[in-house]
Image 1 (cartoon, one colour):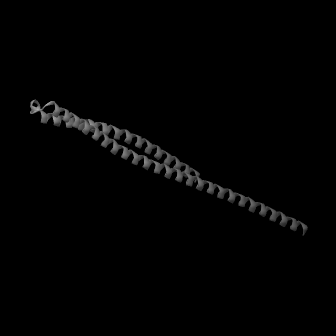
Image 2 (cartoon, helix red, strand yellow):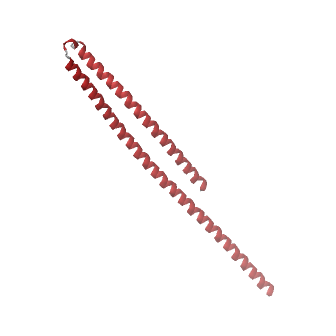
Image 3 (tube, helix red, strand yellow):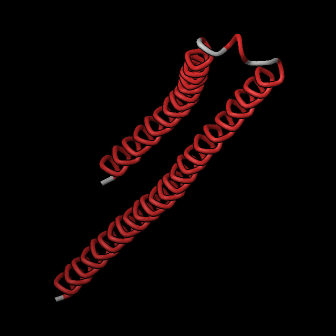
Length: 151
């Protein structure tokens, strides 16, 4: 019983370590995806604006160009904030899930240790009971022997 409990605890610890590694990898992957998507969206938006402006650029004045640049910067900042919010929410969810998994693991580990202690206590109690019975049998046999010798 000790062995299976120990193996189970070891398995649970290994699973928890894998979950932590997976969480860290997922976190790094999410950050990389945010950077890539932001870059792609910025590039796509810049290409779109450039395409629309190519034919009419000579007719546009500096104020219009400044407005487009300002809008682009605002859009880029808004997009960055949106991706950060989504990623932050996902990371928070992953952290919460990991916290719950850790709590569950700790509870299960405590339960397994408690079961092991009860089993050991029961085993020791049975051993003491067997010793007591053996001593009583020996005493009864000695008394019978003494009685037979006295007859």
